[in-house]
Length: 542
Image (tube, rainbow, N blue to C red; front, side):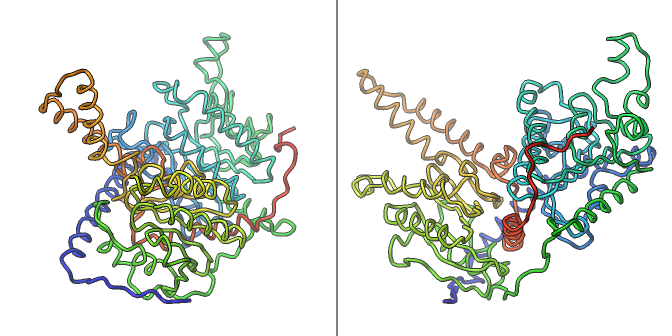
């Protein structure tokens, strides 16, 4: 394939300014993630006294040493509800990621019980639902480390109805043949009792696990019956009387050991249906340093750059076989490999014009025909507007591209590197078009339009309204209105604002993009190849 060349001046002032700005944004979001970890770590002494491991230590022990772990939505709920983004940052109250346990790639989740007892927040719920969606689509087993105070009752109106989807999904995952292993480290009560109840395998920690619909105070209030936690739902009860627990562990470490043993035995089942090849395919690294990405892409989405310079630092040997390079050239399409995984890439060098939309739609269909996964590298202000674009059929051709994206039946991955505005977000496979994964760089922006453009639009509309009334708009009032609109949209379009609301699956350092994409493509490939044995029902305890 043709090898891309680079025209970047690595010593130039623009490159160095871009690099400094990107590093500042990376430091900011990494610091926010650290505040979540630090908040959880405050309880280390308390957990140690109880003979328990901290939630993140549970996850670390569960994972195969040295294998990759891709943590998802680390800043879910950032500065929302009771997450102040500072000392009380919570990351949604749970830890979720894709990792390897006993040689099996799977979803690993853990209640962050060191923060508010692992109480479930609205965005923490959405984070859990997203993890189940990924598991079902890619046939990934789920291991959950459960210890939660249940739903945060202050936000029950945002949790209760959608919370039922967690249990419905568990039943559907089981029926689809995707195993779910739950380790009960502590409290799993009220609605949370159905987490182990609907799991295929349950490991309960002796003296710590509590699984019941109502605790001692509520039982006494409702029935006048006095009972202890252990009598109502301890590990011994569920292992010897109710049959809810298959295994009893002596402590957290033992429970994690049992979970690893269990998954290893499932892998040994006939056909090795969860086994996969963790080795990477033969490949050559890019010919250009991934560090260059920091200086190539400006944090100001209004400043242009050539997406081919990014591609040259993401794909194997910097080989990129460009599709229709001379037609609709602001939309870049082509074939490449990422750590040996074939991929069709679509990128933006500006707004998407009618020719670019036609080319993209055709390319997407061709990739579907050949079974090639699609990678969308987003940086666009949207579809082209104006008389010329409209007369050239922008609506018609943009719709063709959206049709192709919406109906593409191959794995789709999206990286939001810069601007993601208007219908450009849709055409380039934003969250609402169901890509398998969406990741964002810390300088990215996502909104219906930029704050400056929105302010100007409202100024024009308001001025025209006053003119129709025979009045003249007050310039000072108009300026104030414009500033208010601009400030609001600018604040609501940042990467941190978007990731808090799970519009992506997490922020990534641009330098990690190739590795993250390679892992995601491996997950997709394994999901396509993995054989499960669906039933018409979920596994139930008799």
